[in-house]
Length: 339
Image (cartoon, rainbow, N blue to C red; front, side):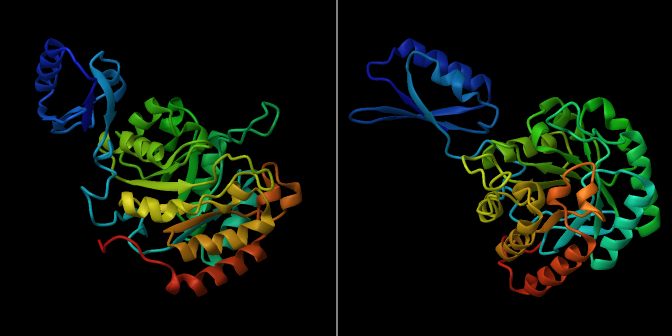
């Protein structure tokens, strides 16, 4: 971290700053230029509050030399992280497809879709038991009963299950869930992230609607700093001025995240586009760009789905998508280093 001092700074204040930094096990190197005096802070500055230093009377500006996230940073972990989910390995060049309905509606619906997506090549089953909805009058999910049905579908197909947690109080219900999904609205629910950091569960962390890549990685850092390194990042589209699609799918995040972090990255073309006919081309683009996998919404009867039917593929459409993805997978861009 570099601290730029104002001209004619108070030397007593500088001495106080140096004492404070030493109390945090940091050392300070002073460089006196013709127009500016620059302080180089040496040590672990990840816990330093930039705004606190900027607020000092003698400080002109503060700049970071290294990113504040350490555990999620590829500089400190050059090999790709591979997350083992009940035998299914995510990351490190292994491409996986998570598929299933937006929300669990009934035993018959879920089991039918689960068997279908497995037959087509899905390696994990998704399904919403708790559903965050913009309107309080929309279907909110089957809640605990939905998780029980997901576990039944897992017994039927052998597919590990992925479902979203909404609140810290729900955590005991997720004991048998294979991957806990943190949705976009909860990406910066720091108390929830800290609690998930104390579990031994793989976490699928979705990027917030208006969040930067660095903010996504800092949220991953919250989980990892608690001791849980099993984090999978998920790009699900961000909010921009464009209205042609539900969100804007930021596929440029793939090379950026692969450069900055060792964590696997999954792409969600269903929530990002919000339109079923756009899901396939964006899924293919994500696979070609080097993503570690996809999460796709599939419904046996999209027009009558209780949640997000407009962006859901039919089982036949999903089957075609998997065949196309598998065909281009060998030519996908590869990033990182072998684990």
